[in-house]
Length: 395
Image (cartoon, rainbow, N blue to C red; front, side, top):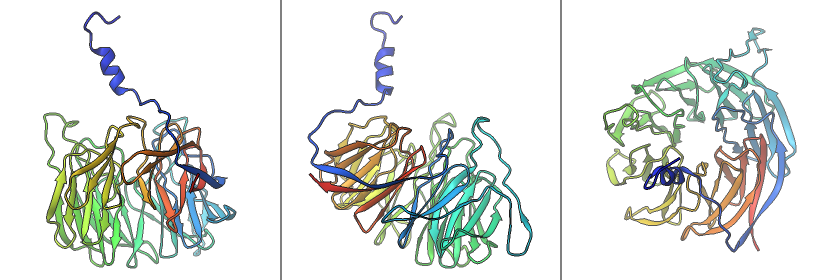
């Protein structure tokens, strides 16, 4: 038992997730439809964001099931599995990916996805296979082995498919057949977070963040680096102290690129040359969001913070979701939305961070990122494998 003056109880309380407090809801979370996608995300820490392309939403579970749904009705358009052997157009047998088990009770192997673009749905696996499916009918177009586990969402654009692998490489594959166009290598620290930043296309340039705290701008046609910037220099005596991973995707808005690192900084960089415009000491491994002239970041204790895009001053912070293991934030209309580990969806006001609505939607939690269509409909995949379409309505 702790003695008088023992601070262990206080320390334990600081690590406990915040209890949800009552508030007067100002809007209502309306679920339009719900659909089951395979067997869910399993026991591994998977984040498989859904993707919206035209009038469809695409989602995958951790065990190889990929589905396309009509985004207005939720009706299934097609369903396939990337884990079963199948014969390609040439008649050659396409083999089942071998599974290196992190948890022998859990045979999930899909780890990177879902990317969509150029007529493809893109899925990555723990064994380093990148699978390109036809967005029209789910047929497998090609499958490429990239040498290392894929933890981030692949991206398509400018005739290429970009994928960030666990060993620190950014590869550009030809969109038509998966042949390697170029590879950009980055040194991987001894100890890193389990995750990778998804590359982001803007025109003929791709922006990517890496586990060593660097962010780079690279030409997609030939892999030529245009510039690179160190968001945070590793510091400290231990490898744990020196972790400065960029696991959240860089966020581009106009001439500015925003990027944040773990145990590091949130920075605004000039897209043209990577020159820093401002910085704030914030630690995060999640994606950023923007709206109302703010940059929104969920820090590593799950405090939601709004930073003014021009002045870099903190506008507000919401600590009511402390240590609730939040998803990446998404901003649309007047709202900022996050999910938590208990399956609650939380709606905050972009103007001041106050709570507007809350609803429990998935009993196993909400970890993956969310997609917005038409500036009003939000799609997300719960850990249970339930794909939800919701809208926020006035009460």
